[in-house]
Structure formats: structure tokens, C-alpha cells
Image (cartoon, rainbow, N blue to C red; front, side, top):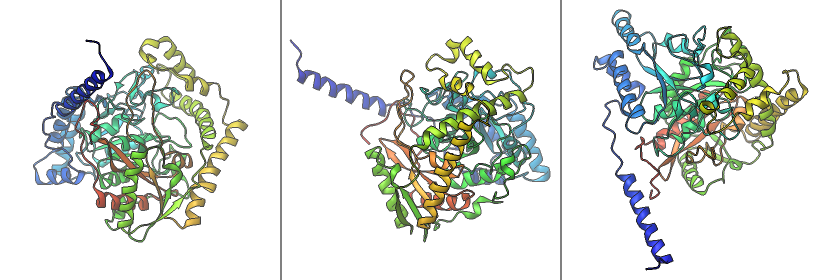
Length: 531
């Protein structure tokens, strides 16, 4: 019988129904006793004797094996620390003799693989070019973690070179680590560049992780994976020992499932470091304990600017944001529409700054590794990638590294003019001007849309986002889960003036407590389009 359009239509319905059934029939993940537990929960377990640093490390390592390496195989952990259990044992002994060392005593933490650890783990930014490199010291933030009593559980995968290598990249992929998957729908992208850190927290492979951001690399994957991410003011957290892109915008920051846990980790990471002059800024303001700012009624009486020119890129995301804005109003906030923030033309100037600073900053970092390092300059990284195309560039190239290598010194007029333009547009004429004019405590916008499909052929295809204003200004931003689009998380970003982390955390916490939007991932093979 000759097929007709009706037959094709009915066949399509059967295929769609089968696909939905496959989604719902996905093998369930075995229950995990630490699932969705907070930092306070783990600390209470240790105080009661039910948990130890050793048992926590063992449980999370088993979870990594079951979920990250097997089962759904989200591939967020690029390497586990071979010394994790020994560190945990030492911390258990110390607890018995001296009590807790600090706020993270015995707590397993994962760090992004562009943050130096002077131990048996590698630091590669996901690149095969840095396999075998040995940083001379821990990064400052790693020292802070160790001093607080944290157990460094391992390193997380990332978008290679923090996603600066190619204009056609696929987020969450690195030559060393492969492709990280989004735990809400495994064929969806985790976003980046702190892909592994976000996925590991979302999938309960750890309670806390450290990411880094130049523009969107903490807040965007946090949004796409349904967690809280804090991008601090540049200079609040040291960058020494972090493989750089651009000193004007780079920062490390916390990633967690709750605002409170992120606030605790921010307090641990923040510190003045002689190795990073940005932390010596005389205007720098840091809190000893960021949890003191948290107030479930913190939105009451606040004035919040709604950055309307960062809406409108996706109807379903706008619907989630409408509910989020209603929640802000119900919690006592006054909303003020803002349309001036900041013009899109900052993009060209930002990219120019990033290229100049990448060449200068990465060359300085690689030189610090010493003469035995596999590569010692950006030029040598480019040459390595060309020699190892099959391993390093099977899906996308390195056009942005090549453009950076062609740039001159940081005294160049093009660089200085672009940097001045960026700061004027995002600071003086941007965030500061808007907040002054409307007497605002913070600004809000959708962090980004729902996760796109992972596509190694065409690269990323993201919808809109709001990270650039705060990123280019070097100002803080906090993203909090705000809802779902077809089961895919969407976050709301709170951002504002330099050093306004206490205010942003207060507002974000109040929103979180009023909405409680986070739901753990189901590790579905694909998004359930019925929800």
C-alpha cells in the first residue's frame, strides 16, 4: 500500500510516544544517603559522630563512581584526588585532638581543573598540552580551602581553556576530559566553562565546588544545572594560581545547592593575597561571615531593577521570570523597570580586552611553571594543538587563541581604549548610573535560557543571557534556581555594585526561601517535553 501523509503522521505519533516512554523508563539512580544534604546537615552528622571526614569522602567517591563514571556517566569529575582518604583520616584525628580547624572541616570539595593544586593531581584547564605540568604551589583559594579543613576530593572537567579557545566550541568538552553532560537531560549541554563544577554539585557528587568566571562561566552553568552560583567582585577572591583568561574580569567563586552553603564557601575563599594586587584594592570590602547577611525577610522594603533589555529572548523563559518577579513582589520588593543596561555594543570591546589579556596573562602563568613545563607560551599551546589535531581539535578549532597571539602588548592603544570603553559602559554609564538614578539595591534578569542540546558538529546554540554587564564591570552576581522549562532549570540573577555581595546574598536567599525552586536531577536521556 502506498504510504500517505496520514500514515506518516500516525507513525510520528508512535515514535514520539515511544521516545516519551523511553524517557520515563530511564533506569533509576540508586538512593544516595547524602542526597541534597546541606553543609549544615553534614556538619551536624560529624558533630553527632554519625559521619566522619573519612566516611564522607568514601560516600562521595562511591557516588562519583556510580553516577559520574558509570550509570548516566555525566563525566563531571576529570580526576579524583588519590590522597583524599588520607587527608580525611588526618582531619578526623585532628578533630578528636583539637576540634574543627575551620568551617569546612572534613567537608569534601571539588575544584575546577584550572586551579592549581601542588599535589598528585594535575592542573590542565582540560588541555592535553598541560598534562605533566606541575604547579609550584597551591592556588591561594586552594590554600584557603585546606586551612578551613576541606577535603579536596578531586578536579572537575570544564570547557577547555575556560571556553576561550574557539568561537565554535561545545561547552563542557575538553581534550583531556571529554564531554560533560547535563544531569537533567543527558543529551543537553551543561554550559560552561565551569561545567563539571556545576554538574557535580547538581548531581550530589559533592556539597560544594569552586568554579571560575570571566563572563558567565559560574552563573551560566549554575543556571543550566539548577544550583546557586556566586560570581564575586573582581578582587574579593584571589586569582593567583588560577589559569587565566583576563585579569580585568577573571575570578573564582562558589557553587552550591543553597545560598547559605555558597555564602559559607565565599567567606572561605575571600582573602587578601600578595600575589594578586586586585585583592589589595583600597575600596575592597569583605565580610568575615557572609551568612550573617542572610535573612528570609530580606526582600522586604528593597528596590530591585528589572533589566528588561535582558528579557524577551524566549517565551517560556519569560514565563518563568514572570513568576519569579511576582514572588519578589509578594516578598516585599518594589520592582522598577530598567531598559538602559548596558548596550550590546560592549561586546566588541570586551572581546578585544580578553584577547590582549589572554596573551599577556597566560604567558605569565605558563612561564611560572618553569622550564620543564610541556608548553611555556600561548604560541607553544597553539603549536601543540596543531601537532595533536586528532586529540585536541576533533570538533572545533582554536581561532580565538590565534587571534590572541596576534595581539600586541597591554600598552597598545586598541587595548587601552577598549578597556576604558568597557568600564565606562558597564560601570559609570551602566550599573552604577542605573542604580543611582532609580535608587536600587540590586538588578535582576534571567541568567540564561534552558540548556541547549549538546552538538559537537555545530557547537553551542544558546539563547539569551545576562552575565556580561556584571562580568565586564568586574561586579558581583548571584544566580538562584527560579523554575523549569520542560524540566530544564532556569536561574534568576541578582547583580549590582562592586562589593555588594552581602546585599545580593541577602536578596537571593530571601528569594530562595520564598520559592524553593530547586529540584534534584532525574538523569533523563532527553528532556520530557510534556512538562
